[in-house]
Structure formats: structure tokens, C-alpha cells
Length: 210
Image (spheres, rainbow, N blue to C red):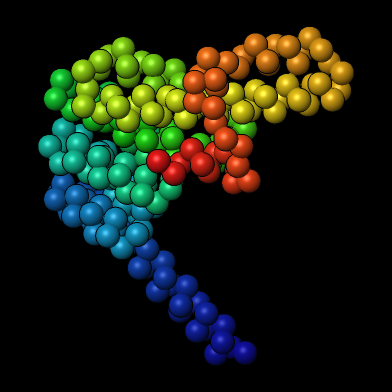
């Protein structure tokens, strides 16, 4: 019994030693650690290394590339809120005439792929459409515009589907005024022009297959 207790204490002591906080390292140490952990799929550790890089070397030229890599890594790992955070911060701090439309496009991709997890979130859908419209106004000649137009159509059709579903709920509950409000929110012109075919596959999954 005492031996087991001793071994347990020894193991805990070794674990704590292994987890000793590392700090005051050169920027290259944190930078290399970020990419190493991205390759290993340890994104939480990579985020932690980025936090250290940023706090210890605020003006390091390695920060922009690390930030963009983390945004891409979280996007690939379907962690869309985190990917959007990195892209938004990158755009705010390092955006310029040469990269702003690309980073903004990556933000839109984060929103599109997050759609499957927020398909019933009206505010998320509205915010995403606003973000798309802002992109169109800021970067009318962007090479990504065809893809952004397609995103807009998919978001609006998804919003139409949600508004129709909500209207049906109010109809069943005989709440005519609320039903009419949601029917008026449907983009009838787009609905008529595209004539989306109902599918057994959830509509928000159909949107992602583009």
C-alpha cells in the first residue's frame, strides 16, 4: 500500500516537472514550436506557443506567418470560431492592399463551413451575409468574387429555408402576424431564379458541397 502511494507521488512529481512552465525564449523557439505542434495536430499547444511568442516578442516579424498558419490549421480542423479569430486579427494588424481580400475571403470560408453548426442561428446567418456584402463593397475587383457571390446565394437560400420553416411553425400555431413577418423575409426573387430542389439531405449540408 505504501509502495503504491510512493509510486503515485513520484509519478505526480515527475509529471509536474515535465509540465514546468517555459518562458523567456527566443522568438524562433516559439515559432518552431507552433509549426511542430500544428504538424502533430496539437493545436491547443500551438495556440499556447503563439500566445508566448506574441507576449514575449510583440514586434517579431514571425508573428504574421504564425497567425495565418494557425488560422488555416483551425479551419482544416473544423474549429471555425478560432480560425475566424486568427484571420480577423491578422486582417486588423497586418492587412494591406495586397492581402486584405484574401484574408477576408478566408474569414468568409470560416463562416461558410461553420454553417452546419449554426444552421438555426438567425443572427449568425445575418452576420455572415453582412460580412459577404461588405466584402463585395470593399473588393469589387477581387479574384475571389465569383466564389463570394456563390457563398451569398447559398447563405440567402439557407436563410430562406429557415424563414420558411419558422413561418410554418407560426402557421401551425395560428399566429398569422408572425407567420407573415417571416414570409416577407424570404427572398422570393432568388427563390424563383434558383428553384432549389428539396432534398432528404439537410439543406445546410447541401450548402457545404460546393
